[in-house]
Structure formats: C-alpha cells, structure tokens
Length: 480
Image (cartoon, rainbow, N blue to C red; front, side):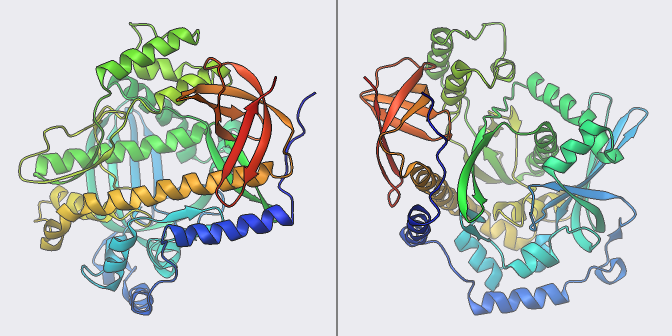
C-alpha cells in the first residue's frame, strides 16, 4: 500500500519548527539587525549616489533594453542582460549592480559586510549582506529605474565564443523583471522578447563550449524549502532550461573576469582542484555497478549530461558525482599568478564577479576588473585588503552550508512528524559506513539508514521510526 503524502501539521509541528529556526539562528550566531551606524550610512548613500549620467560622470546606456531573470519575488537584483543576434553571432551586454558606488572603503557598511560575508537564506527569511535600502532598492537593478552598473560587453561569434570583451561603468534602465518560470513559458510559447529568444540560442551553444573545455554542470535536482500556506513543503525539481542558459551568462563573465585579472597580475579567483585519479577510478567503477557505465571515450561532463534524471540509478550516480570535485576556495594574487588557477568543474580559470549585492568577494573583483580593463591602477584599498578575503569567505561559506543543512533537516523532520510507523519508498543513493544514504520518493527527504544493506540505485521500503524537529533528526528502519 503506497504511503500517503505527508503534510506539515498546521499547529504543533509548525510551532515547533518555528521555535527550532529561532534556536538555530542563535546556535550559529547569525547576525540580526544592522547596527545604527550602518543603517545611517546606507540611508545617506542611497540618497547621495548619483544615477543621472551627467551628474555621475558615467556613460548613458539607458537606451539598451535590459531585462532581469531571477527567482519569483526577488528584489535584490544583481544582474540584467541584453542579448542581440547579429549576422555573425551576437552582442551581449551584461550589467552588474554597482554596489561599490554605495560602500565607502573601511566605512561602517564595509566593516559589517566583511563580518557577514554573504547573504544568508533561511527557511523563514533571509539575512542580507547589505542594508535593504541599498541591496533591495538603490543599488538593485529593478525595472524602470535608473541604476548604476558595471556593464560587460561581449562580441560573440556564431558558436557563442567571446571574441571581444569590454567593461565600463554606466547608467542603465532595466525594462522588465522576469521570473524563471514566466521566462521559460514565454520562450516555449514563442512570445518571448528578443533577448530571451537569443538566450535560447546562446545557452545550448555555451553548454557545448563547456563540454569542449572539459567542464561539467551537474544540474542535480535541488531540494528547496518553500513556504506554503502558513507552513513549509519541499520541492525537488531539475533546473529549468532557462536557468541553465542564464547561468552560462554568469559563467562567461566570470571566466572573462579571471582572464583580465590573470593578465593584469592582481585579483582573486574561485578555484577547485581536479578530482584525484583514485576517486575518478572509484566513480567509474560505481557507474558500472549501477548499470550505467561511463565509457572511456566519453568525457565526464558529457556522461553526466546524458543521464536520465528520473532513473533511480542515475540519482545514485549524480549523488556520487557531487562528491567527486572537492576543495573549492578562493586564491588571491598580486604579482605572480596562482600555481593552479583552474576551477576544475568549469574547466577554466574563473572568478565570482556577478553577485555583489549578495556576496562580498564580488565587490573586489568588479573594482579590479574595471580598473585593469580601462588601463587604470587598482585602488590601494583593494590591494591592501585582498589577502583577507579567502578567510572571510571560507568562514561565511561554512556558516551558509551549516545553515542550509540544519534548516533542511528540521523541515524534513516536521514534514514527517505524525507519520511515525508509516512505510515509505526510497532510492538508495550510496553506502555510508554501517548503513546507506537514501532519498524518499515523496516527500524528497534524504537520510542515513543504519543497518540498511542494499545496493546503490535500489528501491527499498522503510518504516519511519522517530523524528525530532528540534535537531532535524529522522530515523528510518528497513521493513522486514
């Protein structure tokens, strides 16, 4: 008999979950309100920073019909794009919010941002990197508003390769804010504006270029916590095609930024070492055991891209693949370039430079790239503080990862609360010590089951033994 779909009980489980979120913020020492001096500085900057081209002394690019594509309801809009097909390829304008214009080096906003590192996303809200008067208003690339931006211009050939790249500061005006869902619907229906139509040309070609350089986009279905009618639910869906295409715009920009910094002899890269030979061999053996062998004449990325995401065996393979590349981090340089500048999963040197409203390091990368691209010296404050960024970002990434895992575990426990004793179907993702890691079919809860002896990719039936919302613990046991 199939298990009934668990729904979060509206009273007891929800109240317990809300309490657990509050405790989690305290356990992780997450920041609360911004200090008064930070808010005051932000209010002043929001009023004082000029967005008139003449007053700001910047180029006027408001005639370019930029648009934004973000998750539904987003207000901190870092990027806007305009993509126009040409007889030989296309011209891409990619505008990034000019957050540096609003932040005084070594001022109150700067100091607080260095403590936070990045915007943190919780099930019950978000903890912004910068005061919302800046990140969700004055610096955000909201539609029909004049905004300062760093504008990349790429000339693309017929295969969507960049043959020319420039970067300048300017005033822009985005025309429309699209959600991913609405944008995908418009493309599929043939009603999309020219930039979105061109993105459907650009995205697949850039994915092909990724395959050429040995990159691999996992595109693993992501489990998301969604607020739902006073409670929470989990969604696990593969990204829409337009999300992948839009991500390729950011990847192209990050690779261009890395190239500028490497040629200029100063910068900060996002790096990841290549997978160890022994790990690759073990992964290849696992694909054979799961019945979907990785052929020796097929690249890693091409193999992953060809997997059927609905296959239980493929889920196990993707879970194993997600651990194949490890050790992502940041490396700075001022003079000699890093010994290994590669981001192995991308297959090229790469820099984080497209999300300055939400990630600290991007502010430095933008300022460095704009100076180098236009033949100016990199500001002294940038060079003087560059070496501190890897440690700041490592600490912030650690907090974000712990927060994501803890929040997800608590929602999973709350969803299953009240269903103790019920039997669920699950897919075995892989062995873990004295048991196995599994994913329930519905809801998409992931857990370790002690004593489960089953092969990766197998479908099993498990009985829910206990749940603890406060700790995010779910205990399942194999059925007889």
